[in-house]
Image (cartoon, rainbow, N blue to C red; front, side):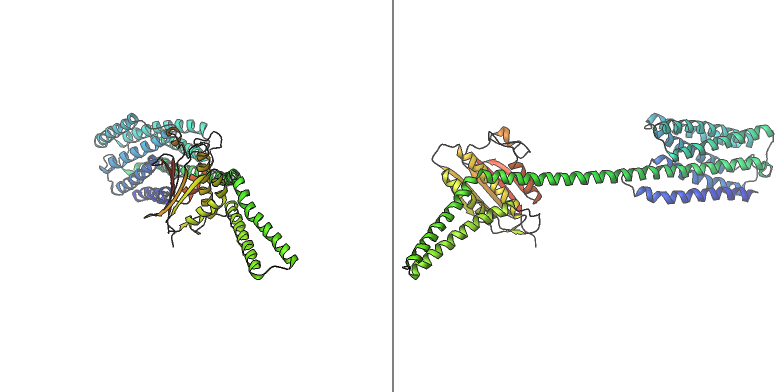
Length: 480
C-alpha cells in the first residue's frame, strides 16, 4: 500500500520534471517575451514536495505521528501554491512588495504551525487544515483567472481555471469524506481508498494546471512572434519606401544642382561645338577650293578632335551625375571627381569672376558610388557659387583641397563669402533646413550628409580661417 502511494507521487514528480525540462530551455531562448518567474518556481518547488512526500510515505510507520520530512513536504506544497497564486495575481497587475512580504511571513508562520500539528495533532486535523488552506488559495486563484479572462480571452487560461476548479472540488471532497467518516486513522492502511483517490486526483489536477501554465506562455510567445513578424514586414516596407523617397530626392537634387549651372553647362558645350562648326566650314571651303595643304588639314583635324573631346568630357561628367549606380566597392579618385565638377561649373565660375584655387594632394582612393560622391561636390560648389554671387568685392575665392589622413582622405571646400550664422549652423544638415539662402528647399546639405554617412564618412562645417564657409568631408580608405 505504502509503495503504491509513493509510486503515485514519484510518477507525478516525474511528469512535472519532464514538463520543467521541456519548457526551461525553450523559454530561456526567447528574447521577445519572458515568462513570469512565479510559475517556474512553483513547478520546481512542487516537484521537490512530491519527491519528499513520496519518500516519507515509503518509510512511515505511524501516520498519526509522521517524521519531520512531512513538515518539509507540506511546507513545500504550501510554497508551491503561493507561487502559483502569485502568478495568477500577476496577470492582473504587478505584485507589490507588501504582498510578497505578506506571503513570506505566512510561510514563516505555516512551517512551525504544521510542525506543532505533526507533534501534537492527528492525521485528520492536519488533513482538514491543508484542505482549508488549499481551498482558500484555489478560490482566490479562480477569481484572478476569471478577471484576467474578461480582458484577455485565452484557451490556456480557461484550462487552468478548469484545473484549479477541479482541485478545489477534490480538496473539498477530501474534507467532506474525512469529516463524514468520523474515522480515527493511525496507520496508512486505515486510510479509505476513496480518500486516497481524491488526494491523487487533486495532485493530478495540479499537474494539469502546470501544463496549462506552460501552454499559456507558449501561446503568448507564439502571438508575440507572429506580431513581431508582422512588425518586421511593416518595417521592411517602410525602409523600402524610405529608400525610394531618398532616391527620388537624390534625383530631384541632381536636377536642381545642375539646373543652377545650366547656363554654365550650355556655355561650356557651345564653345567646342561652335569652334567645331567653324572648323568644319573652313575644311569644306578649303576642300572645295582645292588649295588646302597637309599641315592645314592636320591642324583643322586636331582642333576638331580637341573640341570633340572637350564636349565628350562635359557630357561624361553630366552622365555620371545622373546615373543610377548603386552603392558598391568601386575605387574612386576624389581628385578626378573634383575636376569633373569644375569642368561643368567652369563658365559659371568665370562669369561670376570667382577664382578657383586647387590643392589636390590626396593619393588614396576611397570606396563609393562615383555619381553620388560627385553630387556631393557639385552641391558644395553650387552653394559656394551662390554665396559668392552676393559678394561685391573684387576677390571671390573658392578653394578646394584634398589630403591624405591616417583613416583615408579629407576634402575641404572653402569660400570667402559671408559664411553661415551660428543659429543656422546648428541645423545645417537637417532636412528642409537652408543656410543663408533666401530661397531653397534645404535639401542639398541634408543629402550631402546622407550620402557621406552611407559611405561610412563624415561631413562637417566650420567658419573659414579668413572668413567665409568651410565644409570638411572625411572618407575612409579603400579596403582591398
